[in-house]
Length: 146
Image (cartoon, rainbow, N blue to C red; front, side, top):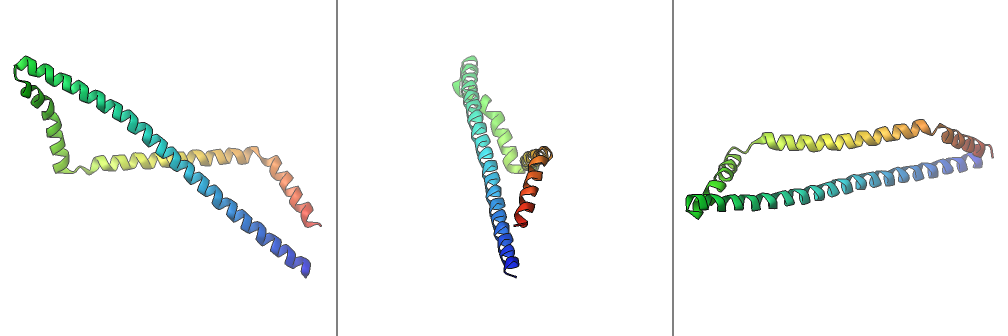
């Protein structure tokens, strides 16, 4: 009876360690995904900032050029700013949900595809590691005979 109690204790300790290991693995996987998304966001932010600066300088140069052509500096800036004002007003007044929906869909599809890649990697690891699981089975069966 004492042997059975020690085996139950051993199995419960093994189960506890297994659950703790799975939780740690989940935390590591989640933190890895968060770090990936933060890195990607910073990279995109940096790239879009550089593009925006280039666009601002280019549009300023265009406004100055148009102002010189029209002999009115303000007219050049007004011509360059008008499309932005019109598009901005349309976006603010109509509040298009199509754009927000597309952004959300893109983010979710990217997230799901990254999880699918991890699942495929796990399957490959399972397929390539039968010898190590056989060794593990031999160790556990020899441990129960003691």
